[in-house]
Structure formats: C-alpha cells, structure tokens
Length: 351
Image (cartoon, rainbow, N blue to C red):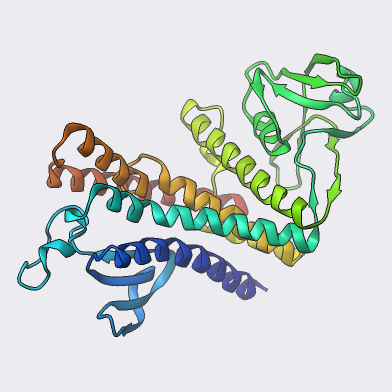
C-alpha cells in the first residue's frame, strides 16, 4: 500500500509542478527568452532529451520542485556571441518579465479552479456558508446557546463568510480559551455567544479543541452551481491560506500546523481511503498552496523576484544583481532549513 501512496504523491506533485513550470516556460518562450532547460524535479537527472528547439527537457530524481533555466534571469549571464542580447530575460520589457514570473502561479490557480469545477460537476458540492446544522448535547456550544440554523458571521472579531474561514479562527490560539462567536439567527437577529471549547485527546495523544456543533451539509448540483462552487471554494481557500500565513508570523498558529513531504504523503494515504474525489480535491488544494506560497513577496519565490522588479520600476534603475542574487540565495537556504525542520517534525508526529 505504501508504494501506491508514494506513486500517487509523486503523480500529484508532478502534475502541480509541471503546470506551474509550464507557465514560466511558455510565456518565456513566447516572449523570445532563450531557455536552457525545462526540468521537473530536483537533483540528479534520470531522464533527458533535447528538443528540436534546442532546449534540454529533464526529469530529475526528487519530485519536490522543478525549474525553467532561462538566460539572463537577473543579469546577462552568458556569452553575447552565443546568445543575442535581446534574448536575455533581464533585457525584456518590465511587464514581460512580470508576466513570465507570475505565469506559474496563474497556472496553479487555473488548475485548481478547473479541478474544483469538475469535482462539483461529477460529485456535487456542499454549500460554503458557515451555517450550523447540528448542535450536540453535553458540549460547550449547546451549553453556551448556539442553535441549529445559526449562521456564523464572525469569530473573535474576525468576519467570516465561509466554513473554511470559520475553521481557521476556531483552531487559532486564544489565551483565555474563550471564543466570541457572532451568529445570525433564522429570524434575522444577531447575537454574540461566548464559547469555551473542551479539549479531547486522540489515540495518538494529540489534543483537539471540541465545540460540539456540525456545519450544515446542503448539497448542490448542476453546471451553474459547479461554476459558483469552483470560484467560491477557490476564493475561500485562498483567504484561509492567507489567514494561516499571517498568523504564523503572529504566533497564533504554530509551525506544527504546517506539513512537508512526509505530512503530505500521510494525507494522500488518508485521501485514498475516502475515494478518488478526495484525491482530486487534494490536488486542487495543493495547487492553490503552491501558487499562494510562490506569489508571496519573499526572495527565492516568484513573488520575491516580482518585488525586486517593482522596486526597480519605482527607483528607475536596475537593482544590483549581486545583492539580488545574495538575497535569493539566503532565503533559499532558510526555506530549505524550514523544510528540514517541518519534515523532521512530521516524521516524529507520524512515527
């Protein structure tokens, strides 16, 4: 079973990476940038062939990334006798470089929307509204006064419009363990209810906050409903991922909530047990993750490179190439160290 899970993990990551890198590749090629290599994976090359266009197409050993190697990504880095000056990316127009750098993220987002649409079309979709469907007896939610039919409008002062958003705020750290949940009743009136969740321990010893209510599962089907769900779910997931990123820096969400390759492998295994639709959904979820992380204005990511271009445009002259490369290198090392930390934590957690 583990080998099947591993193969599925490689396939899922491979599709996401391929779609991302193809965005960079096709926009660079259409813009006339000289491309040395298009690679899926990192590390040693295990399969390669040279295309009629002179580009090396490679599959590398470790399915944890990929890249498109272009001439002059930061500065003129090759012999001008071999490559014409106009084929260096750094010599392309400002807006062309922005498009090339952002195309990978764009492709990841489009992939996710298409997948979500297909899921909704074939398997149906549930309403995204944070409406409570059931409140269980002998749990804090019932005792505090939450009722079936209540629609959650805000949690601890944070507005929510979907169940995804509500879930994030319900798991965030709260020093007093008191959550102020603003709800809208069926009669249109609003009420703020204070709930103190109880903590339950799982079989693996992990602790979970339990409020004691379930969300309403209202199934919707049809072409138009599928389109609505695809864009609504995409927007909802983007917002919750952004909330997660912001609160990682504030400390309200711990690094333990992040997952690396080992954690994703575990999730793929769990998704297999649920069914094919869950595996497909996981692909969309991870594609959005990859897109959002890459667009963050952090050096070593696409967003970081775009940030340098924006700064260049504002100041009216190129940023020192050595300084920019140094920033990308330092942050790349920090990202690798973070990935090692998360991977070690995942191994301990799932051992």
